[in-house]
Length: 294
Image (tube, rainbow, N blue to C red):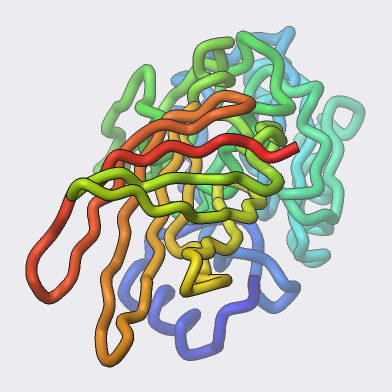
């Protein structure tokens, strides 16, 4: 994701504590702001680092987290960053610290990084990047792996611990099977992809509708077709565990129509929930079900 120079200047001017990793000049997701060394050490200690750990820092900047993990705590690790200048600095820092044989630095987008070997992952990114990264972390990390983030959380995946150090907030999570199931990669829920026949029931009537759905990351995309209003775009669609949420705007015959806000639980073959229709006359609640078409 590329941000404009204006936005980048705003972030650096008004949010100087943000994000030490990816760098926009090279197509990354956040500007480069180094993590202070006392915070680096606090992050590693919060992550219960030990010599047997393999640390991966996503958006590693000059490599200070991975280098300290090796130099002070005896761990091994890899740092990923898109900026070749930062990677060169990280390698030089590893050489100065005498830990070249224990660490590696790779020029690569963090979303393409191989994190499967990590027992401890460290982050100093941005809120939206953490949320986009969350499914990858839960999909690829093994149960028992730990994650530490500087300044930013993971949305509704609440941290196991949260501490304040020198005015900075640090977050800690442990990857569990429950977390993988509840907050993991919705795209793995391939049962949502395809065509669904749905029905709205309320006000003494039933309205049939067809859906074509596709999951991308945590987003639910697609089209919703009423009999008289085909191919209405699914808006604000998202998947959380076994629940989904989306909106559809149904135009009126003349002028504004109604916005349907749908929330439901789903299995491989069925969805069941409710739809709240909001128009100029207020709101109406409907029961809502859908069956997978084969």
